[in-house]
Length: 373
Picture 1 (cartoon, one colour):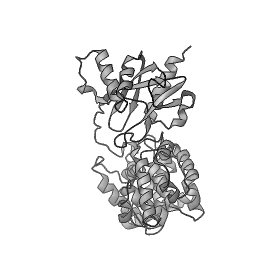
Picture 2 (cartoon, one colour; picture 1 turned 90 degrees about the vertical axis):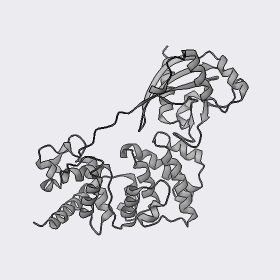
Picture 3 (cartoon, one colour; picture 1 turned 60 degrees about the horizontal axis):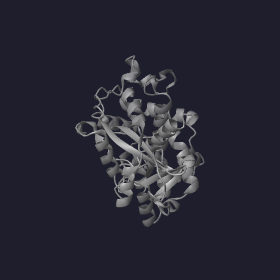
Picture 4 (cartoon, helix red, strand yellow; picture 1 turned 45 degrees about the vertical axis):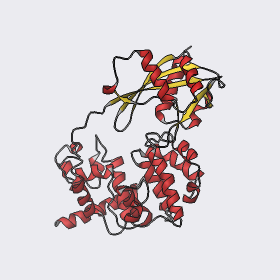
């Protein structure tokens, strides 16, 4: 059989499988009714960046209920959007979501139906642009995400390690992608990767592509995709300060730019690389410097008051970001709201504050430490 015929057979088998076994997902409901809203395709694809389907789904449903159209999202308050996004991580996505919605509305309220136009919008990269073109507009586009990388690497037993193998994977995916039904094909590949061709124990026996899978023929398909050795993730250390007053907790708003920008948070110091932290300073000196860093915008008198509080150590939490691990050391103190003014939030309702996960973990640790009795 000629290689072009093999590609066609693989694609046909995959599409037939998808017709019977497509996952039921909230953003696919309209597509299954032949009603596709590019806004909702875009929203789901942004949420699914670096996030599992199971984790993203409830956020998607909340967003489309609160902001059912791109116009509604463009008119939303940034603080409200960031609060609804809290827990999804990678918060620059949420900021770009608002910027993108505003640009689309300013251009007439319609998303571009081509990759070039979509790539010009904030927060949309090559994968997302291709996915929107294929799924929302039914046009041919080569869609490659992590699932597709894994499936294609195994299908053709690609021995070049990631990330160097990505051009090869894209080329092979291009050969498989049909001229029509490109959206179904892309989603079928994603579904295969999510349900059958999984990371560690692929269930090859039920895969529609098994007869053509070179990785399966090696006897160990799970070794693909081959990955270059991981770099060691550095550790950073920071301090978080829990200031309470009458069962309320003091929160701040982080600067718009930078990690977790624009989010409500606990006051915290800079997060410094472990290797850059001086060992000559005393604990008291380190803690005082951390307090200064954590409350930079507070009035001078409030900063003096903060220094006089009876700070207690509450242990630490660990949190993994993409490029570093964080050890966040927690201190707490009781005060009065007139002594330290700011936004105080009821501790029993802290889940409604929209805190990023790292600070939710810190509050949970504090509550565990202080409510042991």
